[in-house]
Image 1 (cartoon, protein in one colour):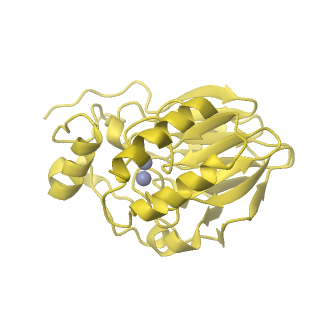
Image 2: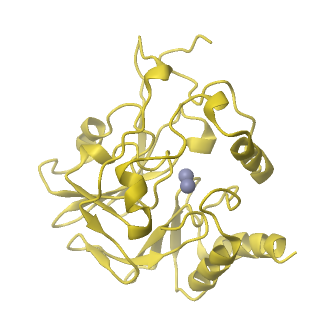
Length: 261
Ligand SMILES: [Zn+2]
Ligand SMILES: [Zn+2]
């Protein structure tokens, strides 16, 4: 299959005060995760780092007011579409339940559909995602790029984030919520002062994935109960556009009805 060369690999858009959403528009929507840059007074944070098809850091630094400032890389969880660039950062934080996976990724590690387990593909189709082409990208990041050369590298964590910990950027302080269900060590980041939540893949406004390795519906129900107890104003999910608390309730109602039969 002959793919065109992309003009820009990444795109970026402001989605809140000091918060920039970064996407890889040429990755199939299934693996096109949201990356969030938060620029704080004392330090910056990148939440999730995409597929790692090309280095993120040079692009990211063009978006930062002060590229020389310290930056903390937080992984909401360790699926292929969220940890592609972790090795580019000196400070790498993840939940302990997925630290081993981040150090040495054992899951999907290819851009080719035929390398994905058939059951995983079925899970995605059942969840409502469009069918996959042979390769998960619809353009090359640069001329001569060979999609077969793709590798998800991973990197060991330099610190761990558990329920109740916080990530302090100076003027933005995020409390860590453990939100398992989609993955055992999924975390959310809650700014209590504003009610803004980064939910990772525990919650987003698109087809949720809950039936696969490391996933648990009982855990997911507990995660939803935890989310229902929060005072939220805005939710930035791991995929798809951001949404408000009313939509959050609708999404949770929908899945709970499915899970409780
Ligand atoms: Zn994801
Ligand atoms: Zn995921």
